Length: 88
Image (cartoon, rainbow, N blue to C red; front, side):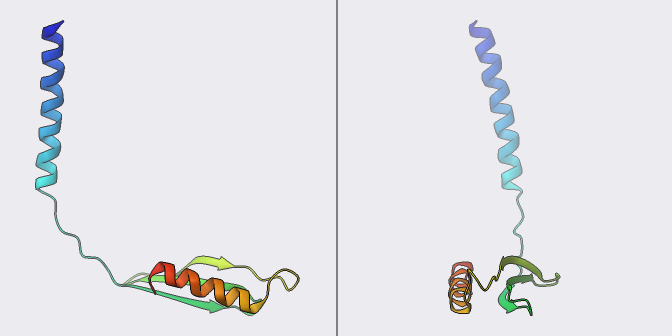
């Protein structure tokens, strides 16, 4: 039983050493600048867009519009709060 525990401990130690070697050889990565903005389409939908440097823009969030349930002030306030949370 003791011999099995020793073998398991040796196996775990070798795996951890391999992972530590990988961590020591890690390379710094350049963080690309990101643009965040909001647009409103003709149908009233607010599009919060993100674009990373060198990439195409994409809709990250859409705030839908329905004149029965949504007003423009609510959409603008919600979009402003989301942009603030995202760091804009």
